[in-house]
Image (cartoon, rainbow, N blue to C red; front, side, top):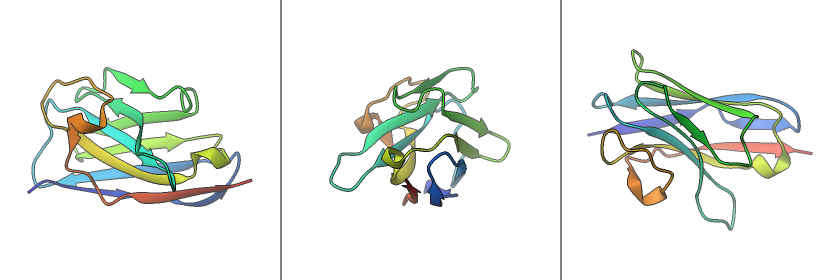
Length: 125
């Protein structure tokens, strides 16, 4: 049974930074792409970033590009999201997930599975 657990969320002020973690257990994710998504109240879950198994390919949503950095430590089976220059519009619950197929480059929500329970990020103005 695959389990993903997010952590690192909190309440911060605009301009601050946070680092989210996504710890995986149950199996390794060799060859699989990992992604971050977020969901604000009343809105659909949206793509934030993904990273390939090797870490050699990353992709970001336009509204976080240049501020967020995704990374992973395969030895620890953990993925990270460094969020800098946070804005009130970044307020959301952040989720991590893994692609359903290995070597898959995708931003589509339906291509990801094994969702974690999420971690709340709230940015005050």
